[in-house]
Image 1 (tube, rainbow, N blue to C red):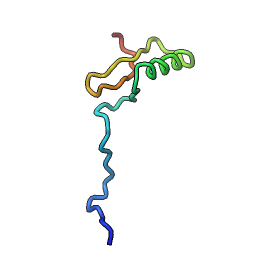
Image 2 (cartoon, rainbow, N blue to C red):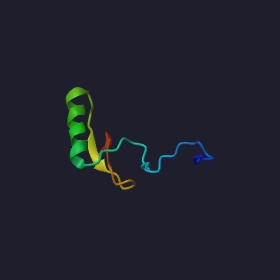
Image 3 (cartoon, one colour):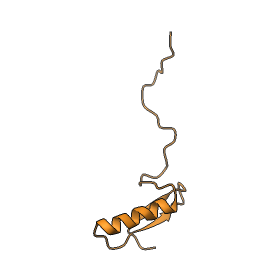
Image 4 (cartoon, helix red, strand yellow):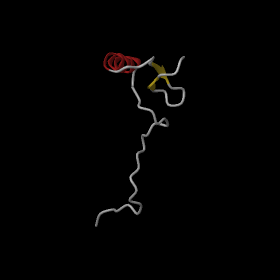
Length: 63
């Protein structure tokens, strides 16, 4: 007889606290910034390190 969980809700134990797309390094984030600038019309976009989760995100807001 196997063990069956009583709660069938899926849990993701390693979920970042931020809801924005995460980049694991500044290089990865800057690569995406370059890609977006080359392929889309954007006013301004840059990468920043999030103080909440510690990963990198993109924003169009001024620094």
